[in-house]
Structure formats: C-alpha cells, structure tokens
Length: 214
Image 1 (cartoon, rainbow, N blue to C red):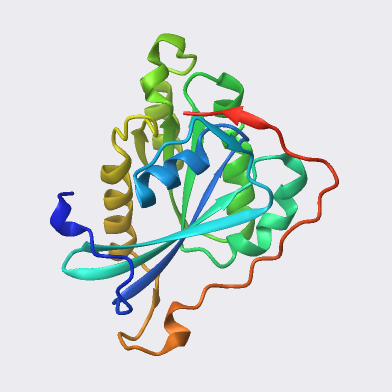
Image 2 (image 1 turned 90 degrees about the horizontal axis):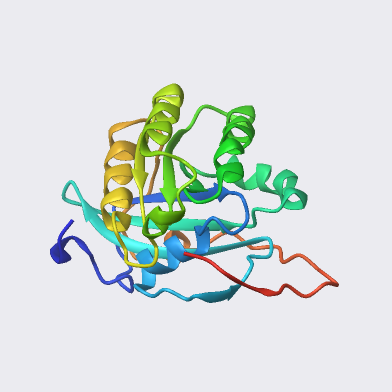
C-alpha cells in the first residue's frame, strides 16, 4: 500500500465501516501494532491495556474509503469473558502471538476457540516482534502451518520498525471486502455514521506497571 491509499482520518465520509478486534495474550504487542499503524509511533514503555480501547483509520481499498475501527483488548484472563460482547460486534479479528514467546503461540488455540464460540467470522494470524528473530521460539513454518489449520492468512510483523504492518491491514481489509462480513454504512454526513460504541471502563484498584513491548 502506498501513501496515496491513506486518506486523512478527519474526513467525515466513507463507504464502509469495518470493526476489527485485536486479540492475543498480554504483551504480544497488540497496542504497539495499532499505534504503529494508526499513528506511526512506537512506544517502548507503555501501560498494559485495561479493558478496551480503539483507534480509527480511514484508508482506500478497492476504490472505496474504508473506516477501520480497530479495537485493542486486554490480554489477561480476567477480561476474556467481557470480550465476548465485543466479539459479537466485530467483522474481523487479528489474532496475535509473540514469536519470542512460545506460550503466546500455544494460547492461539484458546483465542480461536473464544472467537468461534460466538460466530463464524474472518480472522488473520499474526506473529509479532519479528525484530526479535534472534530470540525466536516459534518458527515461520509453525505460524504458516497453524494459519493453514484455521484457514486464514498469516503475517509476521514488527511494530518496532513497521515491517508488514500496513501490508497486513491492507490485505485483511481486502479479504473482508470480498466476504459477507461487513456492515454497510451510507456515505453521508450524518453524525450517527461516525459514532463509536460506548466504552465501559473497568474499575481496578491495582495500578498497571510499565512493560516493554515490540
């Protein structure tokens, strides 16, 4: 995807709205991928996501302006049940593991099961932190084999240097436009088109500590 494909996200008009949810264990780089894609920034130190957050980005794919609403989720076990209601509202899922953390790869099966318990949807498998290849615990072949098992596309990405981030989002959006996963939005200036669902913030007594993530 070249620069001409990216449309200023402040534009009020778009042809389709796609709600994406990013799933995976804590610290696999979910927030970093979203920040890199939507804001072209990478923060080494960040607070772990509490509950849910989202970013919007409007891009041009197949001559259509697509409003991507990308939901970031907490990876901790205590938030998974809460995520089911958001899963039902999403058209596509980015399921992410850390190539330097084998446990996060093994847990992909649990995340896939969580998705499939709700409904049949489109998803893509992502092995993040490609820049940590010297610490790799999951081979490229294993990632590809798992994606074939689930019948989805597969990318290895790096939120640190941006490798494959734009390409992955663009490819996945193309796949969604080819399927029956979308909510069509009329292309007008009605404020209701750009409203986002209410986010219910979670009340936590404990403070989250800063962690490093790529």
